[in-house]
Each structure stands twice: as C-alpha cells, then as structure tokens.
Image 1 (cartoon, rainbow, N blue to C red):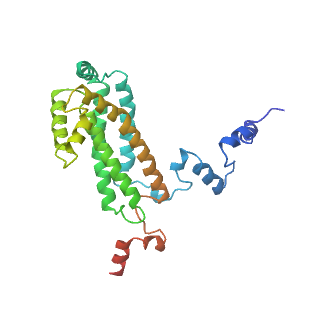
Image 2: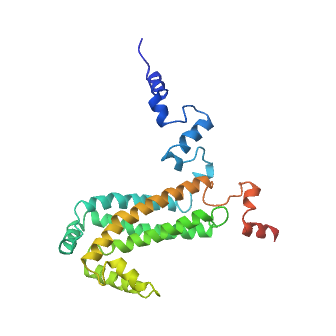
Image 3: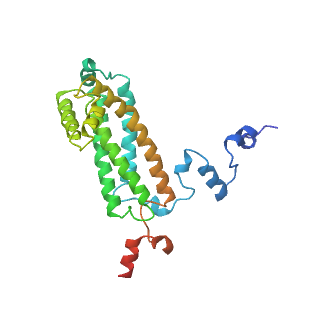
Amino acid sequence: MPVRTADMVEKVRASRVWRSVFRSGTGNSTLHRALAIQQNIFLHLFATKVRKRMVRFSATWYLGTLTLGTFLILIITGILLMLYYHPSVPQAYADMKDLQFVVSSVHRWSAQLMVFLVFAHMFKVFYRGAYRTPREFNWVIGVVLLIITLLLSYTGYLLPWDQLAFWAITVGSNLSSAVPLVGNKIHFLLLGGNQVNANALLRFYVLHCVVLPLAAILFIAVHFWRIRKDSGLYVQQSEPRTKQAKDPARATTEVK
C-alpha cells in the first residue's frame, strides 16, 4: 500500500527531532497558529490574524514597506560592491569609476530614494499621531531608524573618494568639532585622526558596511514587531474605548 505524502509529513512533524525544534505542535486552530508564530524568530514579526484595514490600499502606498524595499536593494547592491571595492586611498576612486554605470548607480539612487521615503514616512505617521499612547515607544524606534539612515548616507558619501566626497566629509567632521567639551574627541574618533585620510576612509567603510547596517536590521525588526503588537501604526476608532482613553490628547478632545 503506497504511503501518502500527507502521512509522511505528519509522521515527520510528530517525530522527536521536529518537536524539539518546533514546540508548538500542529493544528489549524487559532491557538496553534499563534504559538507557531510567537515561537519562531522570523514569523513573530507577522500577526496570526490581520484586520482588513491593515491590508487595504493606502493613499501613500505603504511608505514604510517601500522604505524596507529600498533598504533590501541597498543590502544586495552593497554586497555586490564589496566584492569589487577596495577601501584604500590609491584604489577607491578607480574602483568606483569602474562600477559607476553598473551596480553603483543603483545603490546610489536607492540610497537617495530611501532617505526621501523615510522622511515622508515620518511626516505621515506624525500627522496621523503615531507618537501618542500606547505607541510612543515605536515612535522613538522610528526616530532612531531615521538617524541611522542619515548616518548611512553620510558614511557612504566618502567611499567614492573624489573631491566632492573629500571636502564634504571635511566640512561635516569640522562641524562635529564645534560641539562643546567633547567636540575634538568626536572629531578624532570619527576620522581616526585630525584630517580626512586613509584612516577615515577605512573607518567610514566599516561603519557603512558593517556597524550601521546591523544596527538598522535590529531596529527594523523591533519596529515591525511593535507595529504588530500595537495593532498598527495609529489609534483606530474601532479599537476599544479603554485603549483610546489612554491617550490624554484624545481624551481632552472628546471632553471639548
């Protein structure tokens, strides 16, 4: 008698090895689906159930999702650039000229588009009051992501090692030295010295390709997780009155 595929799958899922990895078990109930999502490091970003308004077409065409898409393009093109780019003074400019009309142009335009989308997304969520209770923590995460996005653009500006990049970073680093008390230390830490040279290029390369992207991925994961836990970015009229009453601004408006 032939063994059906469904029976084989169920046998594998019932095995000790499978249960040691996926402890929620199997089932089609809401409880089993919720446990499977909550206990998975990747699936926990998604909800067990999604309201219709969450997947409805938006007038701003999901600015947050578009920003994530540009970030993924930057990661892919950035990895390709790392295969050919040398973060050294004699070779950096020549490498970027060779890659200027292939991968580099896509990476540059995606970076500029990401900055625009991040600002547009921030303006939208601020206008909709996403900083209000109980979503103020996710608003802070969004501000941190905005700062990381700007730092990614700033650190990547030096990597072509042309005259525009050299003097732009020189002006920007000199501005940091104007900070009271710790300005000179920030300037030295940023450049790895007192002027823009090979140390600064290597330091900006490590920040742009390793430190800042890892920080961005971490905060993006937390950002999406909080969106799901908060049932969206904004307080909706369909939410319970007790949850809406936690917002002092909304409560004051209703009293008036």
